[in-house]
Structures are given as C-alpha cells and as structure tokens.
Length: 486
Ligand SMILES: Cc1ncc(COP(=O)(O)O)c(C=O)c1O
Image (tube, rainbow, N blue to C red; front, side, top):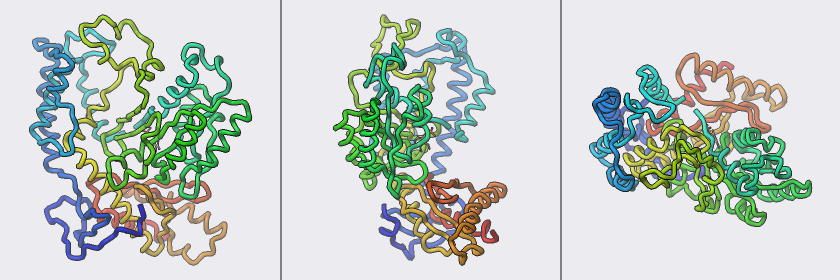
C-alpha cells in the first residue's frame, strides 16, 4: 500500500448531514483507494436496536427461563439437525435483522442451560447475577489475550519429536526456533512457558521496513545446525505489532521446505487483510503455512478475545498433541457421534465459545461487509499518512503497508535544531508528554514507543468503521494543540 498513490479529492461531494459522525466537522469528502472517508460507515441505529432486542431476549430466555426449574435443562437435537437449525453457513451478503434475531434465539434455545438448577454435570453451574452483569460490562468494554502462538510452538514441537509429550524435554537435544526480530513478544513467552528457553529463539534480522530477511533466516538455521542444536520451527509475522510489516511468506516457505521445518505464520494482526481482495496479496504464500494464528478480535472487532489457531494437518495432530483422554468427560460410549467433542484438542478444559461472536458478526455483515471494513480502515490509514506528510512539524517514519501509522510530532522549538544528541533526547520526551496531556484531558488515546534506533514516536492504529477522516484531522490538530509549547 503506497500512501502517496490512489488519493483523489472528491471536491464537491458533501458528507451525509444525517450521519452520526464522531468529532465531526462536516467537510468535503475525500476518496482514497476507492473508499469515501467522510462519516462513519457503521449503521449505528440498526446495530443499537439489535443489541436492545438481544438484551431483551437474554433477560427472558436466559436470566428468567434458563434458571427456571420447570423448564428443560437441554433441548436435545442431533448435531446434523442443529447445523440446519442454526444455518451455520457464512455468505457474501449479511443476513437480515429478523433472521439474526432468530439465530440468536435458536442458539439460546438449543444450548445446554448451565445455569439451570438441575445442571449437575460440570464443575461450574448456576448464575450469579452480579458476575453476569460484570461479564456484560467487561465484554462491552473490551479489556485482553491470545495463546495461538503458544499452540503453534507446542504442535510444531510435538510433530518434530512426539516423545516429548510423554517423556518431556530430556528426550531430545536442544531445540531451536526462529522468528524475526520484529515478532510479537508472545513467541518469547511461549519459549519460556514450554521449556524451550528464550535463548533458543534465534531472532532473524529484519530490513528497514520490518520484514524478515530470508538470507538471514538461512544463516541462523545454519548456525543452529553447526552448534548441534535441532531447528524445528520458523515463525513469520504478517502484520508486525509496531510497524505493521508483512514478512515474505513465499521465500520463508521455500526455506522451511528445504530444511523440513514447521512453518507458522503469526497473522494475529495482519490476517484480516485476507478479507480484502485488494490487500490480501500482503499475505501471499500463507496457504503454504503449517499453522496460522489469527485474531478476529483485532482488525475485525469481534471483541476480546477471539483467537483462531488454524492447522493444515488433517490427521488429528492437534488431538494427538494435546489429548489427555479424561474419562469423566470424553466418554467414547456417548449416544451421539463423539467426533463432535473437540474439547480434548485444546489445552484448556473449560473454554468460552469465542468463535460464536465472530460467527454471528460474519453472518450479520457478510463477507463483503467485513471486506468493506478492512478496505475502509486501510484507506483511512493512507489518508492519515498523506496528511502527516503535508503538515509542518509532522514526520512519517515509514510508508505504511497496513493500518499502523508511525510518526513524530516535532514542536516548533525543535524544528530548527541540529539533529544531535540534545535534539533526539528532547524529541524522545515529546510523545510521552503529549500522551499524558491527552489522557488527562480525555480527548483521545494513541500509543507511542521507541523502536530500534528511533526515539519515542506515535503509533496510530485505525480500525473502527465509526471513525471518519474528520477524526484523522482531529488527531493531528489535537497533537499540535497539546504539544506546540514543548
Ligand atoms: C503480531 C501479534 N501477534 C500476537 C499478538 C498477541 O495478541 P493478544 O493481544 O491477543 O495476546 C499481538 C498483539 O498485539 C500481535 O501484534
């Protein structure tokens, strides 16, 4: 994505005066990469009505009925019949309001009522109204976490040396995994947690844009082999945390093939670009991965948490790797097809049905609706990057490939200074001070960090369809207002 291309000013196009635009000064609209950036694209009115109706459904069907001893604990249906009743297929176009409500009602109706007084099946049961209210609040406010990368390390290791499951780490020589120096810190945590050791994550150099350099990967693999260690896994990142960079997946897949290494792609952040026909080329080669981590709770807004871990293997590797065959849960003589019990594939025992919220959202918006959201976020990112390039006192650090816009604000007092140690020291203090001021004022929030040889800079992330280009203008105006005296 080049921020200097594909921008057209739609001079006379007026913003929709009826739209509920956040922080909006209505100005002429701007068209970037085929996307109109004025006003929010989310239909708040029908969305709010839907939340209200589902809330009523929850009160009646869950809070009152599911706790009523005169009602049934479960309304049994065969899995194949359930699939039809819930119409699980996802389509290009979203489903109408009434159909979505019906789906919600059916989901409640055919779910086991764990809050029913006669549910004695598990180590959880019942309903505490205060805890439930708190869960609504935390869900609505989005407080965090993901273990998909940890799953990848464990499954890759199991595939490499299955004995490890029963005999532990002493059954193998030193294992080494590879990831770019720009990878997410969860890779280090996974290495520590799984007993691989953080020193056995060999970090591969990235280029100036933050992409892994394939030749450097090759060198690190050779190094590990020469040391007598056992390479088993390469992690590529699609959408790095700070810069939003995409590693060259095809080149990395070739190297993994040559050395017979598990190829995992951490697409937690960037995986959602696959929804966009314009942007999915960023992940070219992802089909060659052995596993992929993807968080629909990030760019697609499914709500924290919603972490998908996708594995190419179709030989039940996940189950072999993680199963403990607990006889009190996974009885093989149940009255239905026990392949429907997927619980033993995961490392947790009790788990929330995080996939459900993503499924309902996908049903409601359709594939095209999700694509529009991604396209819009990326077009807004191009717009912001271009505005930064135009404004005095703002400096874009890298051309964005995705929705991460990294920039410095340089206050007037620094603009004519020589770029020596004092300049960098003072610039380093600018972003934290502006952040403190914006938080105390409550006007907006955006992150900052130092990175490699760069002193503190802002990292702006665009996601929500409620955001319009007026909000992008506001961000820059507000930074200027809060920081011009520094
Ligand atoms: C590239 C990447 N991978 C993994 C994660 C971890 O995701 P979570 O915050 O859901 O644990 C992040 C979080 O920012 C990330 O940027």
